[in-house]
Image (cartoon, rainbow, N blue to C red; front, side, top):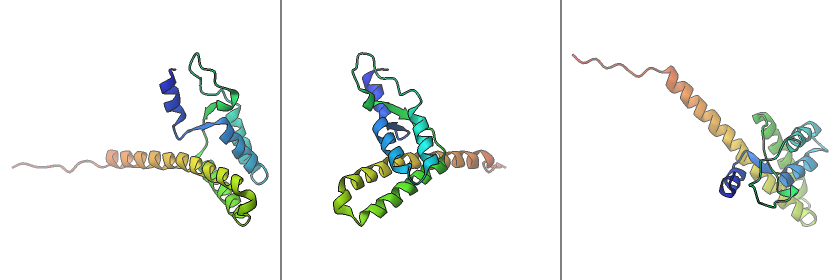
Length: 138
């Protein structure tokens, strides 16, 4: 894989970097251990192959996130609840709140792809199930 393709791939909504996944695990573990484990399992898979000749560290690993739509929704909900609980103490937790909000946006981007895929699939199903009106020429 060349460098351009690598960076393009890493910018896809279904691709997360190791640090974001590890932060998600850390934040979810106290309240939703099963979700934290599902995210942890992603980091146990092989990372996206880096371009030959590049010297990118372990922290720069990127992974395809293959979770169910409901899991992604639950992750967003848990992170949002955590964000709201820390908002009352914003001065003490400003950095953590920024990191959580950034994670929420990343997970929302992934959720949008589910919506897009579902909408596209639904449109294809509707268009395949409806026959075009017949026209008679007399």
